[in-house]
Image (tube, rainbow, N blue to C red):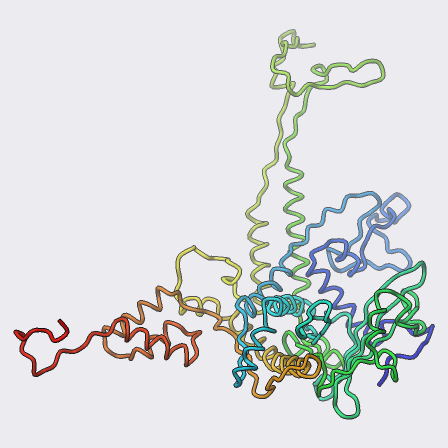
Length: 527
């Protein structure tokens, strides 16, 4: 299927994505923690004052034409010039970051049964690749999924292809039996007056199963796709025109089987879109189902800060203590003044106590109720999102814990991690195989692209001290060989590394046994 035809009236993004993109927009707003984006996502904003005398017989906010009262606290509009004091808590971004850390805090291990190819994999899988995976995993947790793409650009990386990520809210995917068969990415390249230029990038298979990428530039408006124009129209897309297939403008072949892109869902199934033909395959966000709880948390924190603001210290000073600033300039009080003259009473004929002329008032904030409510909401949010409180440092006493204790207390987070790994591993293996295929086809490499495997590190690892104590106990009990003890102490070693380390240990710590026929009084033959 080619790119869309020119159509000045074609709505963009397509109408069938409207509910999906609207929900992703809300998740994106929570992920950013930006109040303006939250209010835009939930229909809020600044409106005219509708609480005045003529607004309603009962007072309060009156719904105007085209606007309904918002159910979400963060979506309630401010009135007139009133300052927006809502305080959303960035717990959504914290959860998404933790999700990425659980998966990719330690780099994954890519293994292939060919020494030369393994060396090439180690070159391509550099820190940039692992940083891309960590970034993609964080956005994946927020939007419910992410696209990973094999990219090549000799002006950026002349020695081979690399990976890039595409956010799920800028793509139109096509699935068959739950598998991605094609996808179209779009991005706004430039806006000139009322004209909006969009770059569309479509990934699909040709008739022989080879992955091809089709590029197109469209001139439209803010909400319509418009007509297709030449890629050379804008300098941002002009480089694509230099590498296109002259027989099919805007088409680039990967010269290898399979798509150059995969989709990684965050978790499945998707509860909200299980009946939607597209949404059912997109995965579930970590923020799905906890939006109302995050909204309530924002309301509690806003009320707490408001109570603190209203409890500011106030000083009431008698008018007789103020000094005139001149005709028509009012009166002022010097708060730094240290000495005052006693004031005569107007009725009693006695001096008025200074305590009656200057009064200090400060309300007490009952913070315990706010704190308890906020902590309960945070606990509910984390549990419903699939995480343990201890993963976020809640209830951490600072004492050193064993791996068994960590697994016990963070079991919920580790279960969620395992569930996500089952989504990530097969897609990474497909994509990295494609990376090696593109390296062969376009960079003249000779990679073996079969039996590639991706391994994630253990979620909880014992400290070196704990492992050393275990090995010492096994040695004392004479219940484990040198090979087994090295394997326990160095779980990241492969079989060759273990064999090398065993040989070194035997060479360094080995002691020759004396001959049983020698007398202890015989001279040592080594002397």
